Image (cartoon, rainbow, N blue to C red; front, side, top):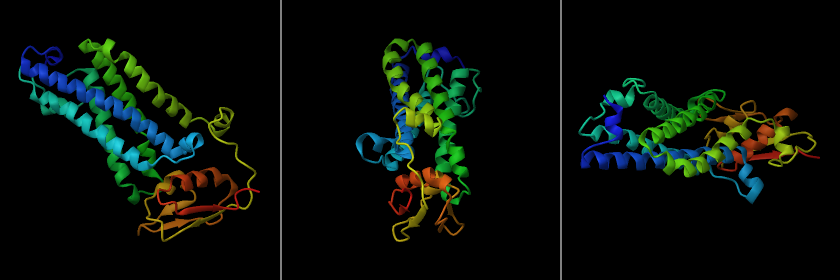
Amino acid sequence: MSPSAALFPVSPHDTGIAEAAALSGRLTYFCMCLTLCWGVLAATGWVRRFNGRDALRTGHVLLAAFTLVTGTVHGLTFLFLEDDPFGVADLLLPFYDGTPRHALGILGLELVIAVSVTAGLRRGAREGRWLRFHQFGYLAIGLLAVHAWLGAVSSGHLAVVWLAGITLLVPPVLLSALRVLPASALVRAGLIEPEPEVAALRVDVDSHRCHSYGVCQSEAPGVFQLGHDGQLEYEKRPGAGETPNVRAAARACPMRAIHVLGATR
């Protein structure tokens, strides 16, 4: 099919479809940037460093769900073009129509869907395998961002989205970079406090409050493990090297069931 026909519709009907696609695409871009930022802040506990409160992972899940909905709507709108419509294969198979930027969007959205499904099944995964796959979300967002910018260039809307797009993209890129920096660099930047001298670390989990969501396993897989029966198993006296991971797990636990004792002198 001719991509230019979709970009420059000639009928009023297709003009409306193109506007709906543009609006849903911009909402997807906005939501995916917020999703990444919220996810990093929730996983690391950095938001508490600035305002004294933890970021709720529920917010990350809701933003991710809204990103999936708006991204799916963005793709489906092209099925309703009349002059030169997209087929189902054009929306599902990368490079099917020979347009690289379309392929990037398809790959990005399908990878986000796969990551979301894997995250939903994380309780059945072992040793944080779902988390390792979940990290492909960074790649998916990169693909979708490139797709969005190439789409803006092709449709002549680059001037409209330039300022807003750059403004929204900078925080996710910055947080993604900080996420992989060593703790020593983050301490120097003032993002986290230096770890105090460690002594006799002890972990206690309130079995009545624990709902076995598995968030602690993603943060400290060497200490927390979900068994096949869904019961949480953990090391009560982990090594000193696990202190940062255990603390991250305690911060991330949505039920506040993890208590870290005797971690400082």
